[in-house]
Image (cartoon, rainbow, N blue to C red; front, side, top):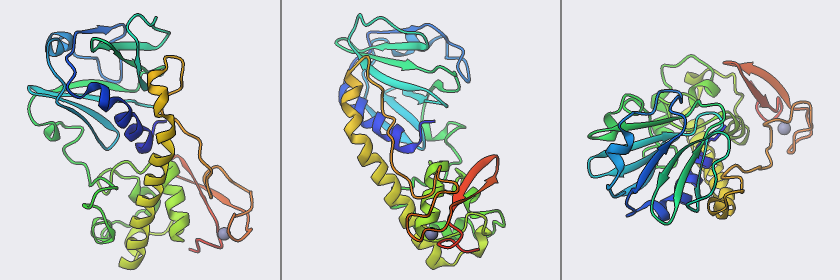
Length: 271
Ligand code: ZN
């Protein structure tokens, strides 16, 4: 699943080509995504010029004078820049034509979304109640401590809740709790301010490092055959059940939390 770093990498990959570009055409081959693509999308976009491309949580926002195109990559989606005339493959559902280049949306499982918001994009129901961006100055130990002060749920579930902080997916929740030395099942409201400060800092470090690693995949955005923006990294606990902890050698344990797997070191992350 594309996580925040992949979406940020996609954003950085497409922004230089999109910023200031005029939309020449829109081809929708399959409108049935998580929600139907608006039937008037082409009429809304043709002849309009992109003001800027940005990211909020895992949404890509393509901003125009008269509204914002909201894109989500769902479970398996991707965006690539291809040359005009590049034949679409299966699951290439939408092309946005920008003259010399085409922005192509692929989504095999169709859990993604392409939506249009007239007026301020922050008011869109999908974005309106979101917590702070993890890499921004709006998120730190104090903010985290405050946000979870009344939550008795497990800390891992709390940091994956978009109301607390956006874009901390399963991989990054596992890894940041390891680096912070915090057991994933601890009650969120049992964390001290100092623990929250450490955890917030680790979340930032891990996401920033993943985005940096993704930078090397940017060239793929120009390559019709390349795989966009998904990168393999080495992890301390994620996906390492029963393997020795890379810090202390204890076997990594796995538990289920909210239908997701949590891996942790029982020695480095005591209850
Ligand atoms: Zn350990």
